[in-house]
Amino acid sequence: MSFTAADVKKLREISGAGMMDCKKALDDTNGDIDAAVDFLRKKGLSAAAKKAGRVAAEGMVLAMTAGDSGVVIEVNSETDFVSKNEKFQHFVKELAELIDRQNPVDIEALKALEFQPGQTVEQALSQLIATIGENMSIRRFVRQHVPGGTVAAYVHGTGKIGVLVGVSGGNSDALKQIARNIAMHVAASNPLYISRSDVTAGAVEREKAVLSERAAASGKPANIIEKIVEGQLNKFYAEVCLLEQGFVMDPDVTVSKALAAVQPDATVVSMTRFQLGEGIEKQESDFAAEVAAQLHG
Image (cartoon, rainbow, N blue to C red; front, side, top):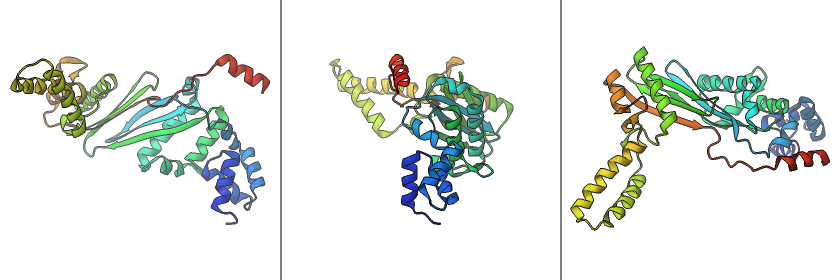
């Protein structure tokens, strides 16, 4: 190797290309940085540099299953238009399938995997950015595996919300159907926890403090206040815990009872809900000013 880690860093700063792309470019040019920059430009990979600073809060969420495992993934782009692009959709689907097969531990491990012969995921992403002309990022993914059980997926709208729900207890058609219905419920109701045993002690204490203070203001005796708080805490659990929520398809029964009616020993063991762009701060843009800047740039 005729180059150092510092050379890779320098090339990344110049080109904005991914680390693996920069290493390959330096490999192919015997460590000549100028030649490596040209190499990346010829491959269209350095085009990603100009786009790397743009906020990518659109894109799509995909959830899919294969047997007793499933994957939910969010890949972001700058505009909603890209989510309708067939190349982009195909890339996201291929990524989900790759994650299910290889089970990478995180985004960096995923980017280092071979996407197709001679090309890593990171290189494929850079190429897609150059081809479509927008900044994109692989934001997050979760793989669920329930040996001998069922994993159900649900995608709401055109990739705006994606849900995975894992249910233990077999994989009968009836269990698969109720698991999918529960995934739809999760998309609609957004529970924070599966059951009350999953609620953190801190969350319970905070809720108790609020309820106690509110009840104390009523001037009722301490023993009555305690019962009021207990009753309202049960309402809190019913709001935030999946199994205690009223089932969206039959609000008269809880999700737990709806599942037990299909199979008494079945249990929800995992739940993941991704909403597109949640937590990403979108930049407010003045479209007229943007066009003017391009005309005079």
